[in-house]
Image (cartoon, rainbow, N blue to C red; front, side, top):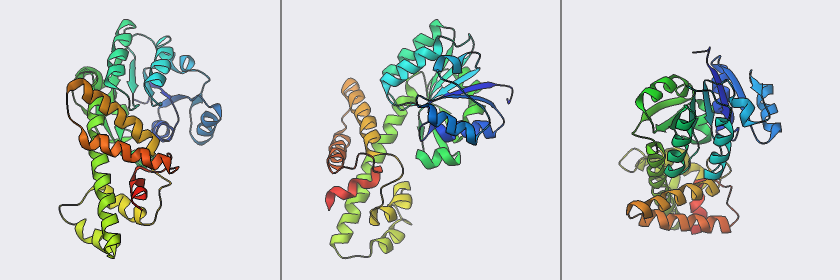
Length: 286
């Protein structure tokens, strides 16, 4: 597997460590980032190559992985990469984007005889840095089987969930769940503070029962400390929730709680918290 030529496009808070895990695993890694300084920083930390364009990064690569911003970024970077990708290569998109753009890219890839997987990730910055991401994948089974050994270098679990677009739809479900859980946790902590309870002590008790969640285990104490300068930003969560809400309008599902929490995140943005962690929902209750 170390003979594979792998490219990673996009070195944000997620892509930077993900590409680093590939390099540490001994793979031949070429990276591209719009901001050259970030690519140079990566190159100083890891063994690999940094280039100045998606086209250059993707030429001769066996697998091209990307993690960028939104649908427009995905379309632009993927189209540029595809212009130089060789037949038989695989393009894997780790961006959280719409199912529509995933299906669009699948068709573009087929025209170039390139395989495609939509593969959004969950686990946040810590998951990326620790190689403990969960990857939700849409595409063909035979393509997934070829790509999975590479994906598992920075994931604790990767799973094929259906045809192209299924990965993005699963990520929408993931974000819907998180939004509701974080809002519930914020309200519980707010209630406890108003009731004069030692909320850290209460959380210690209830986290051992049915109320337990990843958010409670990892964010309750930082929420109580008013620490929101890490993790997944509110701006990005609103992007993700709006993707889910748009999809819900298409498939006729009702996401009343999701729509409400999205507006609560808008309140946090108005407080100047666009770059705060998603657990900052507590701030609007104070």
